[in-house]
Image 1 (spheres, rainbow, N blue to C red):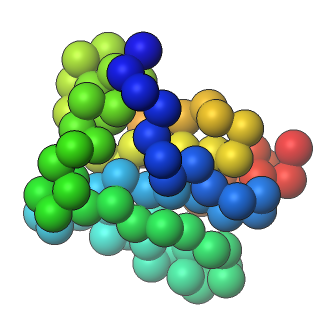
Image 2: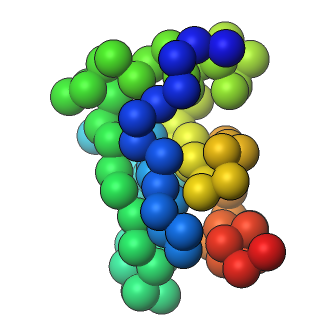
Length: 89
């Protein structure tokens, strides 16, 4: 596994890896904001040093949004319900 991302989220928050052109990213960010859920956004275009991490957790694909949870697990294009459930687990 590549070096662990230094952006591991605090409990109750997520780190979301995005791009500026990703409609799914825009939708999830909007949903998180509406629900008052905290997140840190990492735009891969601005911070390409995190591309290896995203590709690693997505079987070599640069798929966004990729969400990193406080327990170190990741999900690709999760629903708002999945994010809420995993944060409350």
